Length: 177
Image (cartoon, rainbow, N blue to C red):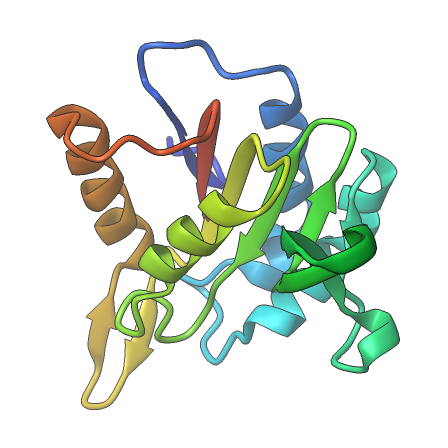
């Protein structure tokens, strides 16, 4: 019997913090509406909408739309008078714990979302952790299947095993939904 969602904690040499189970529970409680193995055509905004209430209950601020007031911006560089000069949009944050959340869907793997999320989050001020949601399966074209979670896990395994690329996070939670 497998559990839902799939998840893996990096680095694998340290025990996951308590909040990891809370986040996994939020995804688990939304399985009926976000299970990419069972549901085709999921979009990241739809998945984010499904998990918003649960994440907000555990202290996250979540992007609620595409209007300026609904987006979440986090500083990367500051300019004159301490005003953020460069900011990045994120799907969610837990400022108290230093967690940045990104949820990818569709062609998240093929569009290099993993790499974009790793680099951009690495540059965000006070980002201590990255939570990255990737689809377990994405079907497209002539019934081709992309396993974004598995591919992201392979890449993160390689990054952490090689030791050549040092990420500035205390940890990364990869979730396959």
